[in-house]
Amino acid sequence: MAIECAERDRLVRAHNAYLADHLRSVQVLASMTGVMLLNDYQKVRAGEERARKLAEQAAIELRAHLAEHDCADRQTASEAAGRS
Image 1 (cartoon, one colour):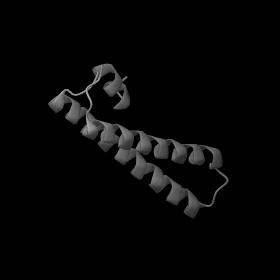
Image 2 (spheres, one colour; image 1 turned 30 degrees about the vertical axis):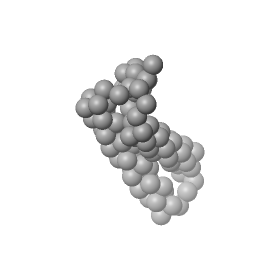
Image 3 (cartoon, helix red, strand yellow; image 1 turned 180 degrees about the horizontal axis):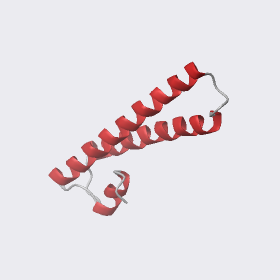
Image 4 (cartoon, one colour; image 1 turned 135 degrees about the horizontal axis):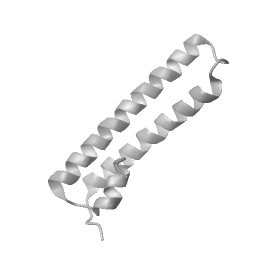
């Protein structure tokens, strides 16, 4: 059973939100390749890159928190941090 930890929960939610943003951006890029205007592509691509970096940073922060505080079921937390 996982130990309650508000900071871990916040980090997991942030990581999941950034991953969802990244996925949406990638899906738009994939579906609109060759169709959208260059300026629109560049905006979506910049958003995708920003979301990817935020998701990576959130995963790093989550792993660091788990390593320091050992406050969660490791398998569940590791999966949430993208290390399944």
